[in-house]
Length: 187
Image (cartoon, rainbow, N blue to C red):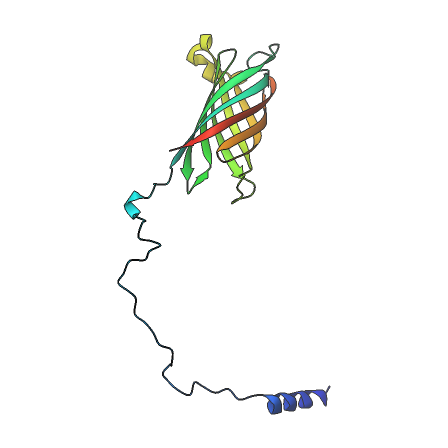
């Protein structure tokens, strides 16, 4: 080891090339000033005519659900209509607010939160959790306080313009399954 280190040092010293600074202070490359003419690629673009970015999404979906919504012995299934408002935060859908009406005239109100699995993916797969409240028209506003009308739902979905969402919910009255397909209107 003692012989190796001095040999390595001498090898590096003898074989090293000396570094020199630039021999001249001027360049030989000709520079040209910017032209005052308009760029033909950008001439037709007017910043004032640019479309503004959307700040909200309105979703219209049709679906099919089955489950115990209000009473333990009532198993209901059928189609439903969903209207969902989604404000955009930094071009990402995070929170959504939903109004749902099913074939038995039960009105559902929900607030949901989304988590995206693969940010930047064109299909935008997501996982959604929501708290839903189903009201019967004859129950009046006192139904909000009834615990059996509240339901927690979890879902997986995919899509940016056309969406598909599949989920499961659970409440004191029992579970439900649902699938919905819809379209997002950007505004």
